[in-house]
Amino acid sequence: MRNIFLLMVLLAMAPIAFAQSHTAPAPLYRDPLYDGAADATVVYNAGLKEWWMFYTQRRANQETADVAYCYGTAIGVAVSKDHGQTWVYKGALNLAFEEGMNTFWAPDLVFENGVYHLFVAYIRGVRNHWGGSATITRYTSTDMWNWKHEGDLALSSASVIDPCFMKLADGKWHIWYKDQMKGSVTMTGASTDLKQWTIEKEPAIGGNPHEGPKVFFFKGSYWMITDEWAGQRLYKSADAKSWEKQGRLLDGVGKRNDDTPQGAHADVVVTGDKAYIFYFTHPGRKKHTDAGELDGNGNYPYAMRRSSIQVAELVMRNGTLTALRDEPFDFWLP
Image 1 (tube, rainbow, N blue to C red):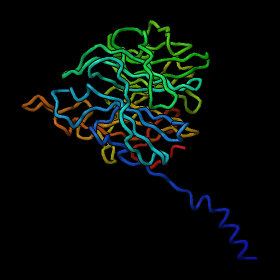
Image 2 (tube, rainbow, N blue to C red):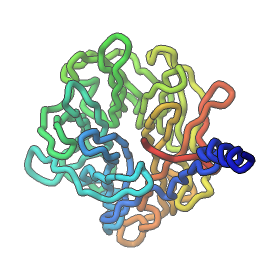
Image 3 (tube, one colour):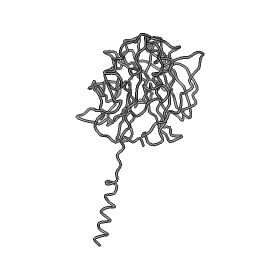
Image 4 (cartoon, rainbow, N blue to C red):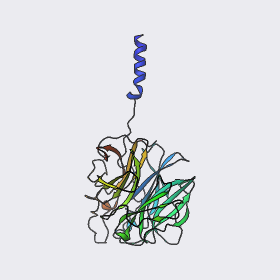
């Protein structure tokens, strides 16, 4: 009887004793072609039961003048079949709809009525220096790989990038994006069909310049992060319309491999009671905006150009969110 009792106790404890903790790789992903993965968004491919990472494929290992490695970029795709533990490069999306070599940045995807909608910032041509008008253009697909171009969104100006989307309680899709002609603030609008947008006159987030807004719902509140180029500014809201400024996330130096300095242009995946923030770093830099000095050829050093994708867990502490970057956390995409 004693042996049977001990066996019953061990069986009852088995789920605890053998519970597996999954450590996030650091870095989570490096682009194997150009080593410049940035601006990632992570989406579940329900058809293939895989997680897909879409990202700006900066050409970091190419010796180009100034910031030309950030132009002429495709949208790269990496795939995970093991719940986010490993990521394999699948290829770059074929998004061309007009002649020439052009620039695609900062993808975001939504799923509506059996159709995936891909939104990307689009700039004609390839430049050596920052500049150029940008539009946000839309594609549709049923498999997340083959995309049909549907056209540009009419928004608040002729230079808009970094879109993100969420359907709110009013039944409408809402968009947040960076308007570079309004001082690089976050503008917002609403749509019933993801095509025609009614844009608010006032910014959703004004103040100092920033980019990369991302809105998500977690632990009973709406949250927004924006990239201030010194970590991610956090905002909290009850309705995704009025925002209360919080602190910053990922604004220090991480201890993991390649997890330095600050975390840039992030995405958040909420799954059950877990939330994970995906961001990129420039591991060769002391701070995010420090790209070093141009060499005699007018190029930045490769160590300053390359970038890595990382992931951290977001947890509630003292009524707000904090990112577990250096503390242990369980990383598992179900």
